[in-house]
Length: 161
Image (cartoon, rainbow, N blue to C red):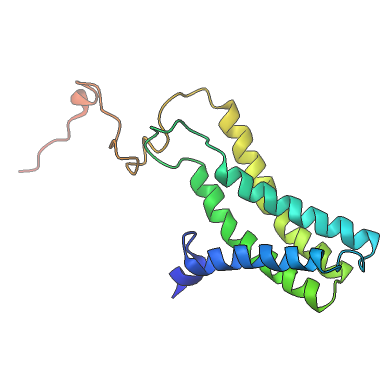
């Protein structure tokens, strides 16, 4: 049951994300944007910018096409789950009544996701290691790194009688 709600590839998460996109677009097209105050427009713009950033880092190719695993893209894909639910909730509340306090709350809830993504991008950019993603985790399809011959040979454990 948890897989249905929290798996990044779940149909429910995809429906929540694209449903929020449709609700937001229809809200703006139907004239809901005109009835909002300036602070509400700014806060809604920040919510949409954070959602666009979260989706953008998921779509960006961080590694070459022949890379063995997802690398940091996996973290960005996982972060899209709460983004989808938060965006859907904010879209529903927009239709009920746009409240400045709720828009500020959704911005505060989305902020750590964007900050963590920026930290991951910064570390990714500073990493000089050219090895494939997931090389040492064993999930990249290439297995663990080979050990040089003779490494640890002098540290053999004694055999018990």
